[in-house]
Image (cartoon, rainbow, N blue to C red; front, side, top):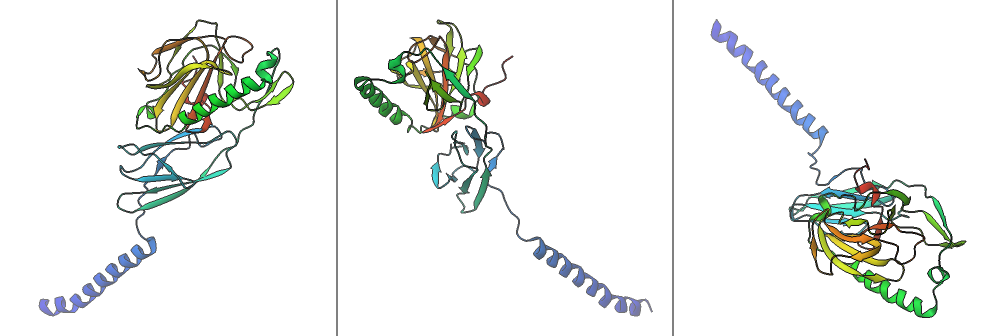
Length: 286
């Protein structure tokens, strides 16, 4: 009797098992393949003038709008967006095993101030032919520096204020000089007295330290992967070209050289040829 009951129940159990397995297979087909995200990128810096840090598996290739982006051995990378960047950008990552992820980035727009400066020497607003030739040569040298894409890792280590003081000029503002419209201001101005110590906002290598027409005594520091900081209108340079400096190390004294209306430190930041806003990269002023 017991044997007949077991045999009668066995087909029902087998049928139920088959139905359960088929349901699981159907559910798996509905869910689709598992997606493994390659790109790690937060929303910070996805704005006009912004710098954003990301990470991919080591050995991956990354492009931004079709342009190759350097990737560190640990998979970290940096991208940046100019003052007039458009509303979107496409970021693509390809892993060593061939997996690919493409992401459409929404770039936030910003409103820009208008800043009017008066009392500048006429030669600093409308240079003569000889001065224009000097300016052209200096711009060409800086353009070469802007192409540096070194393997230094300091771009991802964070930054500190090079000097503390009142903010007298902000990134992106439209400049009206002696009543004439000029290019937007692509840096941060910190009003401090001449002789105030100026420190490196991050570790890096000095790639330029000299007197330039518009920015006066100027230092450019390479932090790696195209990220370069600029310190302008200095009174004294305390490092030379090629020197290696640490974050927070004293590199100069502030001043009023070049095109200025008073002593201050002009702080700039670039990702290759793209001028960025340095202020969001710095800690809040306490």
